[in-house]
Amino acid sequence: MASVSTGEAAAPVRDLSWVDAVAVVMGIVIGSGIFITPALVAGNTTGLGTMLAAWLGGGILCFCGALSYAELATAYPHSGGEYVYLSRAYGKAVGFFFVWSRMTVIQTGSIAAAAYIFGRYANRLLPLGPSGPLLYALGAAVVLTGMNAVGLRAGKWTQNLLTVTKVLGIVAIILVGAFVSPSVPPVPVEEAQTTSTPAFGLAMVFVLYTFGGWSEAAYVAGEVRQAQADMVRALVFSMFGLTALYVAINLAYFHILGFEGMRASDAIAADTVAATLGEPGSLAVSVLVAIAALGAVNGCIFTGGRAVWALGGDFRLFKSLARWNPRRNTPSNAILAQGVIVVVLILLPGLGPGFRAALGSGFEAAVEYTAPVFWTFLLLTSVAVFILRVKDRVIQRPFHVPLYPLTVVLFSLMCAYMLYSSVAYTGAGALVGLGVLAAGVPFYLFCGSPRVAEREEPKEPSVLGPNTGPHQEK
Image (tube, rainbow, N blue to C red; front, side, top):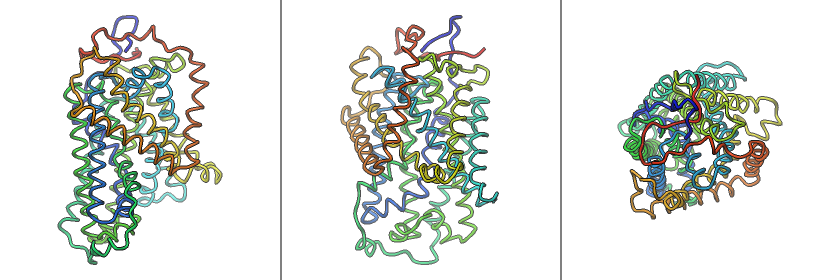
């Protein structure tokens, strides 16, 4: 990474512990999905055994991905995440289009979608009328963007608090499912199996969607205190913790609702708690989902700005985004630019019925439309593990993927399958993602050549000293 002409390192300070990194990962992954998708997974499996196999299988596949990312993150401990890996493996053009897609729709669309989920649930708890969800979504995006732009400590402690709160909420649901009897006995699993229509592949699509976000740990690699050990700990602990929580909460849902009850529910967490604790329990779940959505918004803001910051160090057009504020220890300009795009995306569905029809209410559909682009770049990242072992063989790797190459092959196959599934299930909507990529072409051409001369790669990349960044704000 580059340094300023004065010789003073433009570096993010390594002020995050591995626990902070876990909070970021789990805070992003545990969004609204686990409160919705278990019903869809149950609807596409044949019984308790196959349903749990889907969740365990998803955890194992994502664990393979986490191990692959652990090798990349410890070999290249920079805050740019996948941008660094893709640029080194395939060239700056691929890195540019990755961040372009992430900055314009993928990451910002995820933030907007989670903000709308928060808005819907917050409006239930404290109604503000028909425009309530929009107002709450805007408020969440603006306030959390401001907090992350103000400084690293404000952003990380907000994330830690939100993550702890929603993990405790999930544990509470698990305990309710384990120790409180439902008011109506659940449908026996044997009976449920006779009416099932198996579609295990589709079930895995929903499972892997619910696990989505674990790769965001790559964006804090340049800010954890011990790049080698902390990144491995963060990724491994996150995946074990997430898999255990997801399996346990599905068992709680099953114990209270039964298999057929799970399949029929459109608000499975609320139905589970309401069946045991009544209306107060359902209200508590609404609060939990709102907090979970806030955690996802804050985590995505935190990591999203790091990729935008890394891009600015390579391309002149985005130079202003590459300033790292040393007093606040955060890429303030990149986070604020990302926030502007998020606000635009949140406002679009409110501009009229035509926008809502095209984008979907609350903008959830826009995130689905960009799924093919997301899985394309994740597949490229998985293959980059093989490429960089050859291309950068002189770089020491503090962590090597266990059972290589099998582990990375499984990760790559998962990405390829999800790419196929996302195209198959979104149909013409996949063209939106391609349109986003195409829109970046004139910007890339206008940028000209990457600022290679201003980028100083360390002569001994294996020495994990302070991470340097593109520019430092005075």
